[in-house]
Image (tube, rainbow, N blue to C red; front, side, top):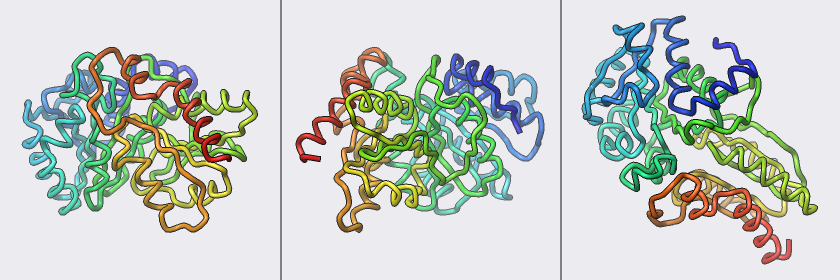
Length: 325
């Protein structure tokens, strides 16, 4: 197990999601020899340079060929061996979608796919590199687990958990260097079990990935306006922690926030579950709308998509007023 400290949480925050993933995999690989790590010629971008140099027999570079990456991983995983593979999220979830669907979904092979730069963090590289649809695509594949950690600590805990998880999974990494800290110390992380960060009686905010930090800021802003909001880190988008949602059904409003398409992701998962519940509260689904955003800085993209603290707070207030809640 990797020791979790406040100092390490700050370090992982500075390094960002990708480098933290690489550090976690390296530390675990030093302790155990029951998994391989692969990349589609993105060793440095995956934070795996030190692992490749220190443990070369555990690292395989498949080249710029995500379809082949999944195929080789499937061969390694055929006997139950755990394999972590990584590439930028649109490439590994769309270019290799057929291979992921068959080898991970249909065959249920023990492959952990890591989507680098999910959401809008790829910024100036434009829509060819944005991870907008990846959560929706991977969630739609039967038997696939989808996890989106909130910060460095949760990334490390997720990687540890996936080492002992015998099902295929997609690890969605959002945010970059300077990743905001949500957890300063160790947490009780369980795949499929949401974490409650704040209780509240008026509004339930359910978020994943980078948006968990923003959800905390929004809850504080709403509190200053007399609106009491709970905050839930729904790190596992599939399987969804429906018991956690059941506990929020007494609220005036359910708000979901994600740095992903509003079609098919976290918001859709919550809405699908609540569809069969009578007298449920209304839901406000916030994320990337049905569009390709104009390229620009990360902050510009968040503003464009209404995913800043101010924009989210205003959206919640407007929804409450509009529905007389």
